[in-house]
Image 1 (spheres, rainbow, N blue to C red):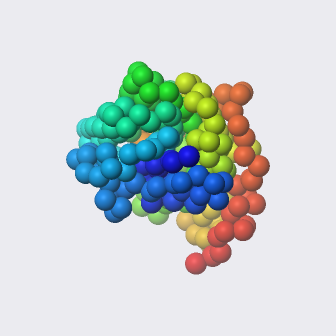
Image 2 (image 1 turned 90 degrees about the vertical axis):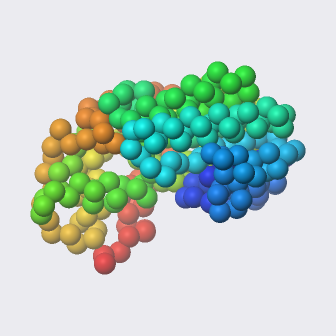
Image 3 (image 1 turned 180 degrees about the vertical axis):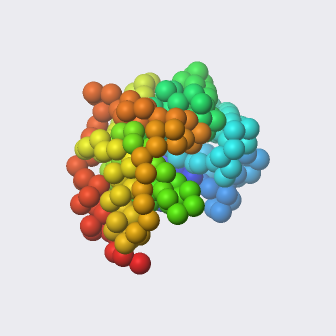
Length: 251
């Protein structure tokens, strides 16, 4: 089986390429730095030649409302058109749990637009909706710094380690198209401000952390349902606190 991973050199994509190869697939990393540009179309037809499955885990370089929408629509349209020309049998896309509930967010609107293009394309598909990755929780916390205080939403988040997202993506990629969206999440829901306390505490950052329900996440105010998966989600096993102890030491 030949699998082309769009965005195959990023955090998720590079791990997915490695895992698919270990599982016996011929996996190709497609990204601008490997000569494949899904906006201009450069290298796309050649990369998809003979491909059975395409997995799209690419992310936008600019998260502002207009550029992010333009990126996901143009990239997805170009990839889907190239898939049809190449006879690709399965399109797999990675999207976000709760994106449809966060219409205030330009980024989330763009991800929903991407999902809708995939669903209406006529190419057999599977969409994996994931919660936030453990690896990005620290960035979310640090981006919340307001003067000498961190202002962080207390809404629930159910983050997952990226390796377990990759495992779910690989299982979907090597299986039959679902023609549906399924969810993957971590094993426990935790308020975001508590996650911030854990990760900033591990960094020995003494600054105050304040729970503020009006703090925006990708441009949207959150509630306790915004980022939480439904009852049928695939759940990972690794807990955030255990991952943190394994992976982060004080600066």
